Length: 108
Image 1 (cartoon, rainbow, N blue to C red):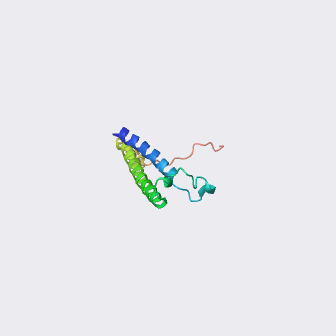
Image 2: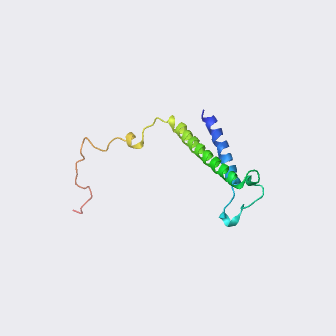
Image 3: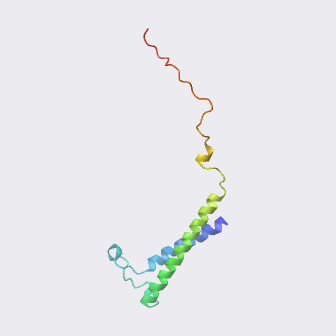
């Protein structure tokens, strides 16, 4: 099950990168990738392409988020160890420590 979700997660990540790179830039990074002729805008109208790519980006981002949560749950699901605060015994002592005089020579 974990392998299937991991493969789907990787495919979604690649698709998300592709969809983001196909979107038209609005002047970010000094105008790099702005109005290249090979974008999705040449296949559809400008507004229709923007709406389609925006919707695809949102759907892919949501599924990427869900598969990330699913993988995190599967990775930590088999771990039945207690937290570190539950593992350590309390520091209360049954026998109080008696204070003794120091054993340092006093020069007498």
